[in-house]
Image (tube, rainbow, N blue to C red):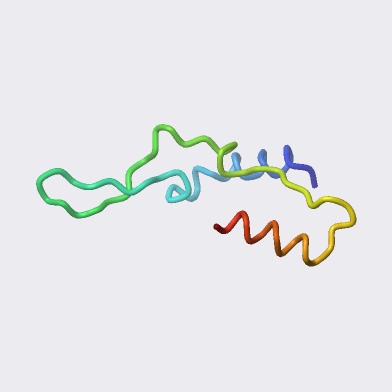
Length: 70
């Protein structure tokens, strides 16, 4: 499955899971956080294609995962 197919599948279902396109905001005067739609949400920022350099060893995967999670 290529990245465009994955992107299309996610976009076709994104309206079913509003939380995925929301952010936390603070209610004025009350101060408690609430979820609001993020008007600047772009799937391309959150969904990216990445590959390991050849030969794709376990150590390379661990290094890549470490960088992504940091």
